[in-house]
Length: 241
Image 1 (cartoon, rainbow, N blue to C red):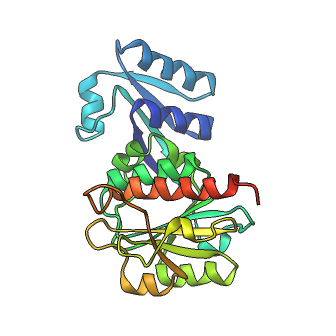
Image 2 (image 1 turned 60 degrees about the vertical axis):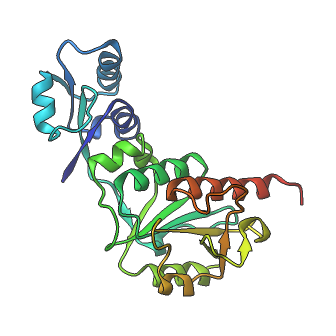
């Protein structure tokens, strides 16, 4: 099976990760130097490169924001949570009810950039893996370790049994995230912006923590909250013991 990837950075990362395993890359005829550079990069990695009019790229992507570049890439590898390697420095990001592909992709981008070793989300009540989500991740999805599970609470309990400290972000949490010891293997649970994590998910967590807020706004976009939480993990790990 294959999937469609489009956009300059998503296609560039797909080429970087998969190389000649890509079926092909299609670039806009007479495209900009940036578009042509992606085509040359793909050719240099042994990928078949074709050209097509912009209208054809619009048709192939259903009017998506392709920026003149489309790739046909291998399906993403999806692992089970039991296949995640848990080490003292492991950081797992778990998503509960993230329905917006832009948020999903942005969280994946932050998770990959900040060293997360796995991303876990449930089969239901989640945005799908889609070209829009790939584009929102700016290609980071190609580098991520992905775990789609049938039951998120069960997956979190499994991680806890393996020594992972599981923490849910919640604006009403009884403690701040900085008060939790994040120096060992951790899982950060990010819930839906409107409802937060579901009660069965919260019950599977060892801590429910909030991000400290100083202004009049009491909550953050899910992807922003996730990025700040991951920075707090890194901050604690950089402080001398």
